[in-house]
Each structure stands twice: as C-alpha cells, then as structure tokens.
Length: 204
Image (cartoon, rainbow, N blue to C red; front, side, top):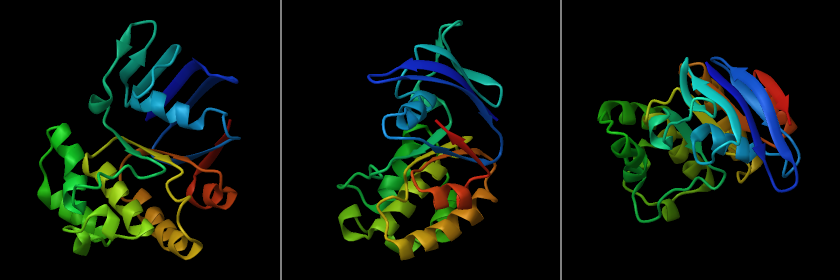
C-alpha cells in the first residue's frame, strides 16, 4: 500500500493532500497547474515536499519530521512520463534494461515475458525513432515494470495516442493491472479513461 500525506507550495497554488492506494488503480484528475505531476514527482523522489510523509508497504521513503528522504532509485517506483522519455540512441531492449542496471536488477527472462505480454518482443533491436507512438508507450511501460516496482506512476501516458491505438492499449492495461501486485496512480485529463481504467478517481 502507498500512503501519501504531503504539503507542497507551488507557484499559483498549494498542494495539500492525504490519501492511500492499495492494490488498485487510482485515477487522478484536475485542472492544469493543480499539482498532478508535482504529486507524482514528490512520490517518486524527483521533487521534495515541504512537509509530510510518504510510505510504501509500511516503509517510510519520505518524512519531514524524521528527516527521511530516500533517493528516487531506491523507492521501488516505476514511472511512465507523458513523453515516454526513451533514450533515442538506445535500442528498445537497451531502453528497457537501462533502469534495471541502475537498480542492480538482472532478470532477462522477466524482460522477455513482459515484452511478449505487451507484444513488443519483435521490436527489441529497433530504436525509438523507428517505432510508432503506441509502441513507444508499450516500451515505456515495460521499462517501468521491468524494475519490479511496488508503485507504478503514469503521467498522461496515453494522451499522444490516436483513438484506435488507445483502445488497444486500454485493453492491454486492464489485463496488466490484474496481473501485477502493485499500487498504480494514473494521471489523466480524459474522463472516459479515468472511469474505464481507474478503480477510484481522486480530483485535485
């Protein structure tokens, strides 16, 4: 379970939030500038809250009172960015394995399983510039899952896809969420997406 209670002062407003996510998908919605991406970055360790506490399965990764701030790479969190953040000079397989190397994880069989599950195993030697938007989205998702995270953060991961591709990816995502034992936070502006993929919806 992911537990988040934090306060973060932002440019136009303040983010003051308290919630928990179990083995489910929590869809987060809100206006631009409400703090959705800031929230994900605080959870992942890319930003530091002004105060509060964040714990993952009982382990505190951030606490202002206890002066705890675990580094991002040690938080067991997978993160899929809106633009996918794939390295253009690395092949699909190299992109997927990069995060694993950073965390000292070596499990080629698991990577092969993920690539086959998301139907990108035939792309392993291609580069990001040689694959479609939907394929990039799957590569980014496999890269995040390959580190065996306990929390998966998704920041508008489907926004750049056309509707036909979205429908395919939605179906795959629904299958995946029932397979993996983790807390998932999905930030999306799309109301249909939030209702179709989320178990609960939190509006900021």
